[in-house]
Length: 120
Image 1: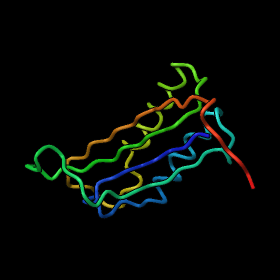
Image 2 (image 1 turned 45 degrees about the vertical axis):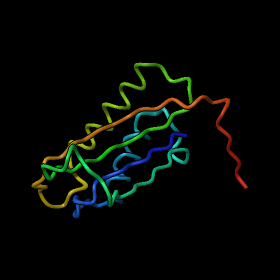
Image 3 (image 1 turned 120 degrees about the vertical axis):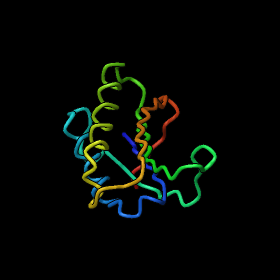
Image 4 (image 1 turned 180 degrees about the vertical axis):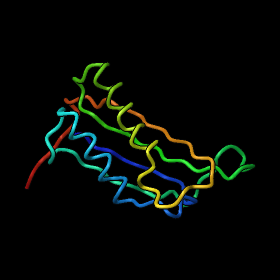
C-alpha cells in the first residue's frame, strides 16, 4: 500500500505513461511514508470521455491515491500536494500540450480492516 490509479483523456496522445508512473512512484517513496516495494501504480487511457457537453477540447489527468487508514490529515494533504506538483511539471509530456489541461488528485482512505492481501 499505497495504490495509485491514474486516468487520462485519450486526446493526450503524447503522454508518456512510464514517465508519469515513475515520477509519482519516486515522489511517494521520497516522502518516507512508504517502502518502495509497497508503492503500486497503474495507468489507464480513457478512450471514451466527455468534459461538459463537449464544447471544448479539454484534456485531463486524474490521480487516485488509495491509502490504508491511519495517515494524518496533514500527511494526506501533503501527499496530494506532492502528486499535484508532479502533474504540474508535465515531464510526462514530451511536447508542449496545446489543449487546456485539468489536473486532479484524490487521496482516498481505505479502512485497513477491509483490505486483504496475500503474497503467494
